Length: 261
Image (cartoon, rainbow, N blue to C red):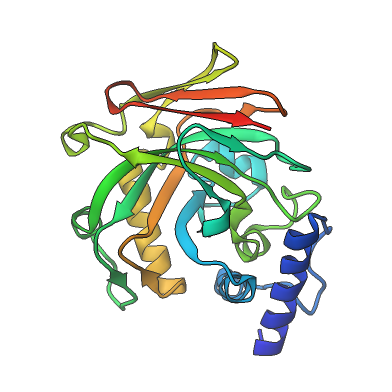
């Protein structure tokens, strides 16, 4: 894609973010033919937004999630500062068309992992992590039917990002735990409605972390110290509506709550 096409696509998506409107898909002259073009549009969208990149997300880290949105693998997207909440957040649903909440592990980076030719190893990725956090994501899309537009367009729209609640650094010794086997329970309005484990996240959240740093290395200019990545839902996404109270229980790692308004 040309710089002009990339800029035009980013302006289109930003307009729909701003107005909270939806499109069927990007026009033929704006539609990214490759993942690399999708990431170029997402980068431009971030520049135009005037917001800071607080962190990142990974979409479709489970086979079920990939089938749901008709993609063959995970997608990376940016989480912006104005869309980041803390614990016990009141998360605005608005005209969200996905209407789900997800329980996720998030890793915060203590040092940069810049773009480079050689892939980062799992050991390098984990060594760059300073802390583990619990998170609740409420994703959304600027496409009316996000299951039909394909991976490149979803990437351009920053991988169905919208709102994220991020908890404080986990105090428990998470590095000694088997995060793949670690169980997570999602509660809605006081009732346990979803159970899962880190295995849902590409088999292990640490594998998802490694996938992300290499995707960012190749397409996003790497990652910077202070940023985080939330690695995908450990549970089947919970259907939500305004007024719902959410509580995600991560066992010995703690819990995180949010109110949907």
